[in-house]
Image 1 (tube, rainbow, N blue to C red):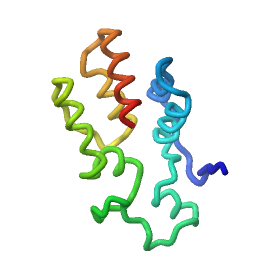
Image 2: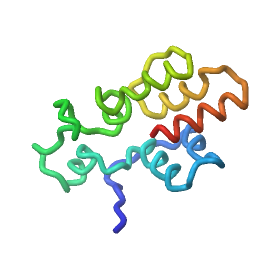
Image 3: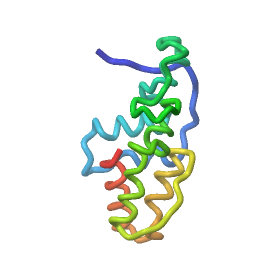
Amino acid sequence: MSFSIKCHGSILDATTNLVWHPQVPQKVSIVVWRLLKDRLLTKINLQRCGIAQVTDTMCVSGCGKDESASHLFLHCHVFGSIWQHIRSWIGVTGVDTDNVSDHLHQFIHYSGYLKARRSFLQLLWLLCV
């Protein structure tokens, strides 16, 4: 069964092109592409489309926040905390943004403009998602 959320629009930007990496399975890139376009089946998106009950929007982690894509992947203390661990592992510091697209762009450019390093960080970000 295939689902598609088409109840609200989003703007394509240059970051969308970063989801396609030759070393990442296509299905992973598709999930990331849907994440960047806010088309994942989060409880908030299901509610917006009239599929979920208004009272059923809390995050699956039990943190008490609404389950949106940016919450799950960036701000949730259970799932979003992976980015702190990854930054510590690769030895960089940074501040998480509120926007998934900005987070991807910032994460990839931690190393400046070294192409091999950007490609590695791009691959790492895609695989973590």
